[in-house]
Image 1 (cartoon, each protein chain N blue to C red):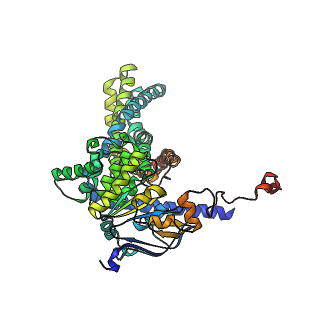
Image 2: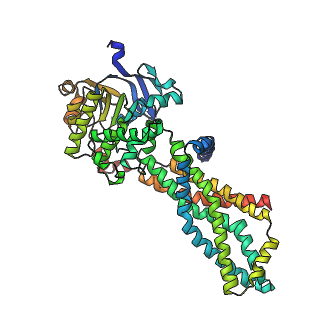
Image 3: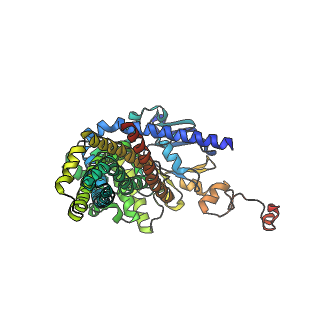
Amino acid sequence: MFREIFYTFVDFLRTFGAFQLFFLQLIRNTPIVFVRRFRLIVHQVYNAGALSLVIIMICGFFVGGVLGLQGYSNLARFNAEDSVGTFAAFSLLKELGPVITALLFAGRAGTALASEIGLMRATDQLSAMEMMAINPLRRVLVPRFLGGVISMPMLTAVFSVVGLFGAHLVGVSLLGVDAGAFWQQIQNTLEPSDVYEGIFKSFVFGVAASLLAVWEGYNAIPTAEGVGRATTRTVVITAIAVLIFDFMITAVVI
Amino acid sequence: MNEKNKALIEIRDLDYTRGHRPIFRELNVTINRGTVTAIMGPSGTGKTTLLRLITRQLVPDRGTILVDGVDIAKLTEGELFQLRKRFGMLFQNGALLTDLSVFENVAFPLREHTRLPNRLIRHIVLTKLHAVGLRGAADMMPSELSGGMARRVALARAMVMDPDILIYDEPFVGLDPISMGVIVRLVRRMNDALGITSIIVSHDVQEVSTVADCSYLISDGKVAASGSPAELSNTTSEVVRQFMHGMADGPVAFHYAAPNYAEQLLGRDLE
């Protein structure tokens, strides 16, 4: 019993150490990939970012709409329905934007990355590259990792903006809040630091989500079952990591 | 050519263990320059593992592997990559990059390693594709190819850097007789026309016999027999005969190790 716990613990430490080394290797190879293989990064920004735009915009719009409804009906109890804009802006920029974008990103782009890389391993494509004296780390992993890291803040920005539009549509056009008050309140209360917090969070989530997806794919057991499992694990672990990081960053910033 | 120069790859006293299962014990194999050498053996004897050891995708527990007189265990990563440029490898399922077209797959090593102008790359790629008879498929994607075609494209890709050594991992598995004949002919022709040294891992006795100069039969982690195909089929060794003639039972047992049959049917092992 104790032996098993001990071995599980050692196993965990070993994996965690390997994970950190993997991260360092990605970082170490980043400059050279930026210089020599910029086009691959652009392609991956398209894959991870542009292809996620539709789902991000749809979800952003409806989250913003819900914020408008909830904000209006709850703030109305204090006769503060004019603050619905501030309420939506704060929620979106600081919390919901980065977090929900990261979760959607894990579902849309993270799974695609993990399964793609896992399949490349299962079909010997990575070994074939090594045999052609080409480092798969630089050709496959780093561009995909960077593509995710670059996409995430941009997707978060799109999410928040579309969300604010949704809140405006519900609050102002539907429920009759004064448009001037809606924007004025946002302008008065929102500080640049609130925006920076959201950007910082989205950057951290971008690193976490892309890193986990690439790691899971690269270390997938090279069978159909293994690739499937890696894909599932990507979503689960990314969701957990994002929510934990979110708590930690918020606790420090506030 | 003197005796020392004749051997291109020498494997000496190789030990390799995966998990707790010993795969090779004191394995000795010599592959001569300019020949087609076949590595044969029953499934699970670690033939593919041997290829991965030769190319140092895996590292042996003990023993040395010399390629052109150089111990590959002592190479740095840069030197290893230089050495690998001299190898061409054909993987079991082709291992074509799925996001690139046939043309780009073959051009891939050139684009990565050379700064040749596009016109020249196009010229080289088309020549190689023509050699495997698939110049017309240049614009297709790997998912549109049949198994035999994919393997021929992979062969073109393996040759595109003009390697000294071509390694084939199970090149005959799962092919129809026509594709099989095409691959057999290509292997022999590439070897003779370009002066390449070829290593084939396979368990297709018939095909190997027609193409190989020398065969090694590996069983139980050791070389059970070696020699030309004719020598192997006339051997008296039990293991070799079982393998060459495809007999179900023999030294390689039909039954996987199991408890006593009668005892188990009577349920005595449950008591």
